[in-house]
Amino acid sequence: MKIKSFMTMTMAAVAFVFGMSSCSSSDDEPEVAVAAQVAGSYSGNEVIMVMGEESSNETKTYVLAKSSDTSVDMTIPEMGMGGHMTIPALAVKNVPLTKSGNTITGKLDKFEGVVTNVSGDEKIYTISNLALVFSDKTVAVTFSLKYGNMPMSMETTFTGTK
Image (cartoon, rainbow, N blue to C red; front, top):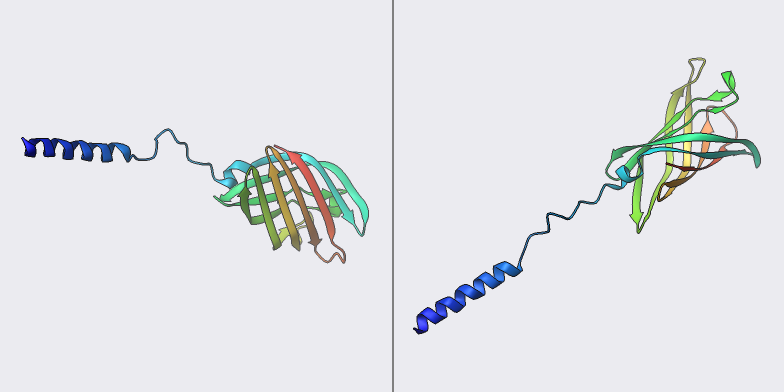
C-alpha cells in the first residue's frame, strides 16, 4: 500500500510540474520590426535654409522603405526651381533605427551618393547629420545637404504625416 501511495504522489508531482511549465502562448503576436512600423510615404512641410536664409518652404512627400528589420532607405524628393536649377530626388540608404518606448529614432552621421541630373550629368551629394524621429504616424527629419560643387550646405527640416 505504501508503494502504491508513493507512486500516486510521485505521478501527481510530475503532472503538477509539467502542468505549471508551459510554452509561450500562441496568442502572443510577434512585435513588428521597427523598419516595418515606419515604412511608407509621409507628406508635410519641408523648409530649406541656405546661409541662414529661407530658400524654400513647400509641401513635399518623403518615402521610407524597409531595408532590414532595423534600418530604412529614405528618398528625399526633388527640390529646386525646375530645369537646370532642380536637384533630383536623392536616396539615403540604410539609416539605422532604434526604439525607446513609443518613439523610433534614426541617425546617420554621413551618407554620400551619386545622382544624375536633368542634363544627364552625374553629381555627387553628401547628406550629413541626418536625424529622424517617429511618433505615431508623424516623422520629423533634419539633415544638411551638400550637392555637387555648391560651396554652402542646405539645412533641411521636414515634418510630415503618414
